[in-house]
Image (cartoon, rainbow, N blue to C red; front, side, top):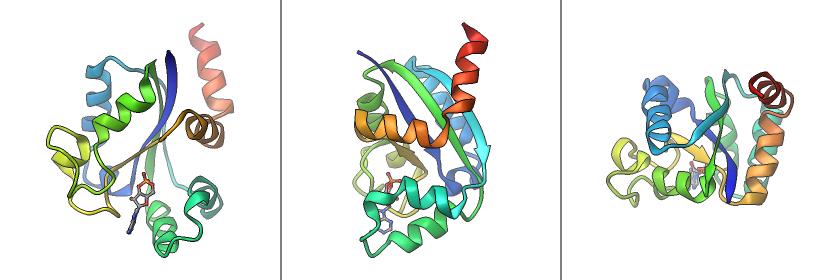
Length: 144
Ligand code: CMP
């Protein structure tokens, strides 16, 4: 079924100049870009986004990192977009990610793994609403 997923190039990916590379991979796959913005993440947004990791030992590092410099937040749409995007990103730890995937080709460490992508329909819905809502709705009206 047609799905939407939230994808973000993290600060390491933006700083390394990999926004175009990541966007290009999803475009070439055939997914449709519905919304995108370069933005500085607030502590509040970072803590909401990563709420499920609140008890993890690396939570503070995660929030510090994601708020350290701008991210590039996107919504992509297509058949099975959530699982397709996850396959294209590769395993969370770049050390385990297969060659041919974004993390497998471009990443080295789990903290700086270039991209985030929604892991399920529930998290996609939650993350899209958290990061986009008004601007994504405006975009859809504009292209209808
Ligand atoms: P992400 O998909 O953004 O969701 C949670 C993030 O936590 C994950 O990608 C990793 O970048 C990060 N993460 C997971 N495990 C660790 C860890 N042991 N140390 C630092 N960061 C981690």
